[in-house]
Image 1 (cartoon, one colour):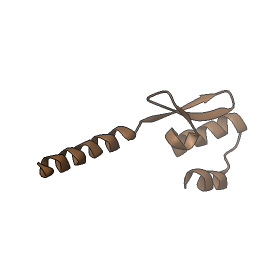
Image 2: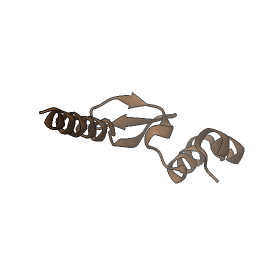
Image 3: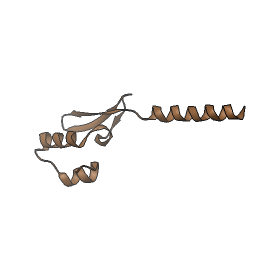
Image 4: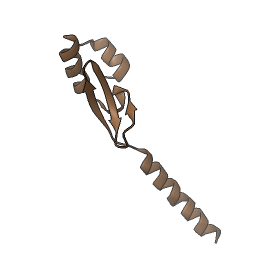
Length: 77
């Protein structure tokens, strides 16, 4: 009986952990870059934006790309 409860607890933990990984997408509005989760949560750009998306946004909005800030804030090379 204890073995069955242990298996159920492990399976439940796995299901909970797998459901925590929401997918985020990169969005922009005006001069703001942000991320939106599958469930509609708003987050910072680093949740769902790739380095190339951030670079393109900065170039379009600011007219230049701050490589040092990209590396520091997003880990972009």
